[in-house]
Image (cartoon, rainbow, N blue to C red; front, side, top):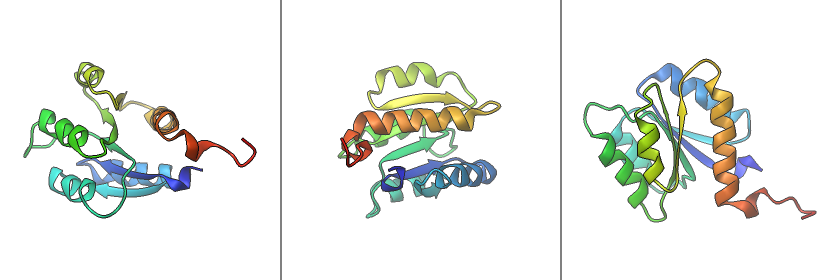
Amino acid sequence: MQREFNLLIVDRNPHIRNFLKREFQSEGYTVHLAKNSGELADLIYGPAPIDLVIIDPIFPDVSELNLFRSLEDRVPPLLFVIHSDLNDYVESTSSASKAAFVPKQGSSSEDLKDVVRSLLKDSYLKKFKTPDD
């Protein structure tokens, strides 16, 4: 079921991007990668469908607020998960209707997978139904 979903992972750290790509591909997702805000914009407004963005929003060339607005203002709005070391984003996500926060720590990839699955299931219930439903 997850193979029908396209994720975009946005992080400055190539090790984290590639690790998360492997983790989510092993779950059956299609994964796209971006290393900066320019690549993020190209991908979210490009021809490839993106269902959810996993982002560490710390970039030197753009404010976090502008990043969040670009994700929320896209039509249709994008689901996104903030995956960061900074707990400051917990409050930011409370006002964003389609956002969640998962702190980077220890085994956060399992927590991240759970949050992604839950957000996608809540937003795309039909894709999660089995033929027997």
